[in-house]
Length: 458
Image (tube, rainbow, N blue to C red; front, side, top):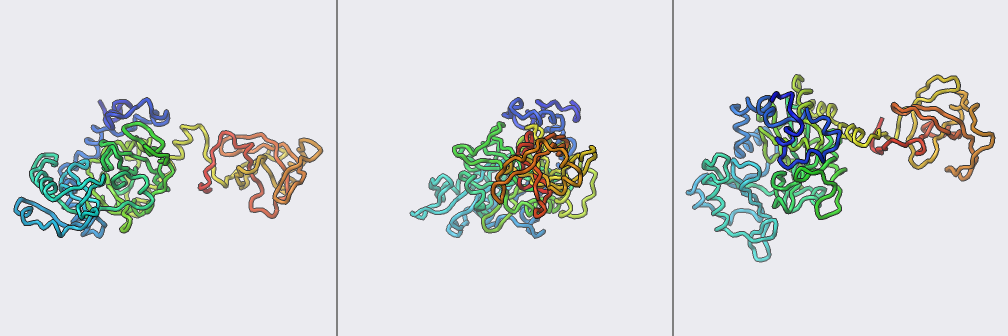
C-alpha cells in the first residue's frame, strides 16, 4: 500500500488497535487519508534515524539526561545509578530521599518504573496507592532491571534513581496516582502537535495511553485542551468525576513548546516526541525523548499528522523561538476550524468586522461588537443617517426598549449586513452610540448559526 493511499480504517488500526473509527466525528474521518500510519512514519520520518546518534541517545535515558543537562535544559535530578550487582550490594538505601522514582535506563512505555511517593507514619516508603514497599522488594526490582527484564531487547540494563516530579496545582485534580505530562511532536525544529496525557487508576498512575491513560489534544496557539480520548473512544469528563477535560489551560505553555523544540535540537532529531512534566516547583522538565513517538496523538487532536509534517518539511528554521512561532501560527486555531466543521457553526469573537448595505445597496465596512446580552442589533444614529438608513423605518412608531439609561423608545429600520460569509436581513434599532466605542452591536437575534468565543480577538 502506498504512503499516500493509506485507508482511513487501516491507518487508524495502525494508530490504536482499540480506536473506534466510526465513533469519530465526520470532520476527522474526512481527513483520515492524511493520517500518519506506522509504515509511513518508519519509511518517511524515522527510518533513517535508527542509525543516527540522536536516536541512539534517545533510547538511553541516562545519556539523554546528560546531554540535555549539558545544553542547559531541565531534567529530573539524578540521585543514583546502579549498573551492576556489585554496586547494588554496596548501595546505601538510607541515603535516598523520602520520595523518588526508580526507572530502567532503556525501558519503553513506562515499563519497570516504580514511583515512591514518600514515607508513612511508620517511616516506611509507600507507592501511589498507599501500599508499603520495602528494601528487599526494591532490591529485587533493581535486579530485574539489571537482568534486562524491562529492556526492549532483554539486554542488561541500568537502574536509575531520580527526583519524583510533583504535579502542577492546575493539573493535580486531573491526575490519579501519578504525574500528568505533555507529549509534544517536533519536526524540523517546529512543534506540530501536542497532547496532555493523564494517569488513571486503570493505568496504575502511568500517563500511558496503552495502559489506560487519557490523551487530550491541545490547541498549539493557546495551550487549551480540546478532545479527550480513552481506549480509542472520545470522552468528555474525567472518569469517576464531573471534571470537564476540554477547555483546560496548560500552565507554562509557550515555555514548554520552546523546551521541546530545544530538546529535539540538542539530540539532533528531525522528528521526535518530547515528554515534558510540569513540576510544581521547577516548572517544565524533560522526562524523555522518543525518536519514534506513538501515533495516538492524532486521535486526541482529531487531526492528521501527515499534512502538518508536509507543511514544515521544507522550511528553514533559524532558531527554536522561530520554530515555536511557526508552529503556533501554522497549526494554532486548527481546533476552531474543526469545531466549525463538526458543528456547522462559525466562531465569532467579541469584536467583529461587518459590512452593511446603505440605502443605495453600496457596501460599507465597520467594526462591531458582538453582544449576546442584547436581543436586537443596534446601529448608531449618526451612522444610520450618513448612509440614509434612517429612511428605511419599519414602522412610524418607536419600539419601547430597556437600555442602560432606563426605558426609552427607539426607531426600528430594515438592515442588511454581512457577518463573515453570511448575509443577514434583520430589523435593527437606531440609537445614539456616539459615546460608545463601537457604532454597532450585533444582538443575539442575528447570531443564529454562530458560536461566540469571548477570548477571540480581531
